[in-house]
Amino acid sequence: MARLLRIDLSSLTAKSEEVPEAYRKFGGRGLTASILDREVPPACDPLGAQNKLIWAPGLMGGTTAPCSGRMSVGAKSPMTKGIKEANTGGAMAQKLARLGFKAVVFEGEAKEPTTVKIDKTGVSFCSAAPLAGLGCYAIIEKLKGEYGDNACFGCIGPAGDMKLTAASIMFTTPDFHIRVAARGGLGAVMGSKNLKAVVVDDADSNLVEVRDQKKLKEHNSAMSKGVLGTHFLEGLRHLGTPQIVMITQTAGALPTKNFTMGQFDKAESLSGEYMEELLKKRANAETVHACMKGCIISCSNIYTDEHGKFIVASIEYETIALVGSNCMIGDLDMVARINRACNDAGVDTMDVGSALAVAMEGGLLPWGDGEGALKLVQEINAGTENGRMIGSGAKVTGDRLGVKRIPHVKGQALSAYDPRILKGTGVTFATSPQGADHTAGIVLPGPHHPEYSPVQSTGQAPESRFMQKWMAAMDTLGYCMMIGMTFMEEKPKLLHLNVIGALSAVTGETYPDTYVEDLGAEVLRIERKFNRAAGMTSEDDRLPKFFTEEKFGPAQFVFDVSPEEIDTVHEQ
Ligand code: SF4
Image (cartoon, rainbow, N blue to C red; front, side, top):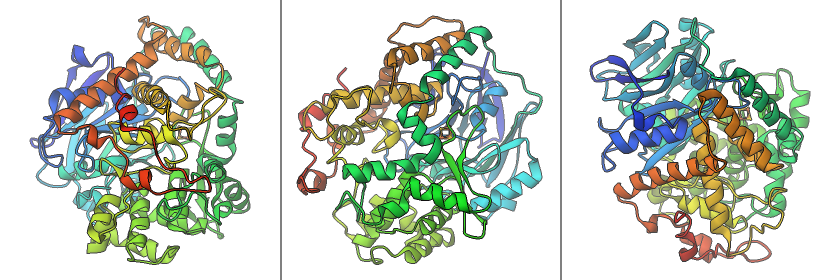
């Protein structure tokens, strides 16, 4: 049976223990939430020794279920001051699961920057001094040279060392590109523990225990057949998440000029369609790429320059919109370069992209100044005053520059959907225990609910509630949100039951038809409880005022879902 690995950085010791009963039914986000709820004082300093950093594969982690190798990274967030789960692809979850770990809990604080290695023989510690001062690309190269191709890595860059609130944790894919546990400043938590890098090598490890392989195979096949060919997924398989640029542009919901407009006149030059044409002509580029083994969608890409030189992998919709249109930067190559600089510093492109737009609104640099934005992001590594400000995200940057319109909830920048057009998504941004985040449950019109109108001011809370539960469950099971959302698009009941059947094949237990929603609801309850104890109230479940006051787009929409309706989201 999988075990819990506790690593005490204060004493540089580790112990593997039986998973306590209370944690057994969870994996991924549900497990990180449960451990935080039971073991971390909600009012503690997120950058103090009482906080814990948890890495947890989902319940399906390490199995052959499609797209099930995501990992949840959890801690109390220095950005939201509440509970946080940042979700990532890459190789880490599957390797930890194969080594027999349900989660790794990093506790205490090391005296010096430390690298931890985990493999079949146990846990070892060494000084991270050789990684000092390096950007994340150089750190990964160095680790790869030292530990070889079978290892995978999680590390922080200069932003994490400086404990900046937009610092992320960078993980490697099987082919050593970067995936990011981006949100909520969890890189700063890792930095506060003097944990610089973690190396995991699963050589000679066992396959994950599965009670009924035949049954799992049948459910896997049904899930894959069910989702392949759906509209959303086919778009992802050709254009990746950049396909969303023209969808939000057409809907008038593409963040532009710090959320003052919903359409950008250069949107086409940032679109997935444009990117596909461009990358097809470029050497060493790929328009479809998988960020982890077992992915049947491959929504990632490898972005190279006109000479075939690698820039970044993968460039995603959220980055394109928040660094591109929201800053009025219409040059995709420039957005890719800024993306790379963010990865090198080890920061969240969403919060930093949003911070750049806020800085433009505050007059620090002109709208559309790509070179200026790139230099500012590169200043994070140098630790200049402006670099530290931008690396701390939109809220800190806006407060520092006296900007009134800061698009954030609970201190975390909004993902790239304007809530005045997508009001159900706005309700999720407002009420998610995670702060404003697209992974918490965006609500989009689609074949699974053709009647849904995203611009209506009523009826949004139930839509948001359902999606928040669904995504919390997907994160707990370890499924990528791309397949998780597609599970609902067509024949939802059939797919839903296969998700439950696959879990049953792994554990040997039976679950009710309501399992997925019940699971999501329970995870949200735990997260809300933590946040309440940390001091949050319903006042924290609100969008910034400018979304409710500034009329937007040709139809002059505002975000007008009432506070009363918003407060019903977590009632059931
Ligand atoms: S669908 Fe995309 S994000 Fe999800 S696992 Fe595959 S490549 Fe990674």
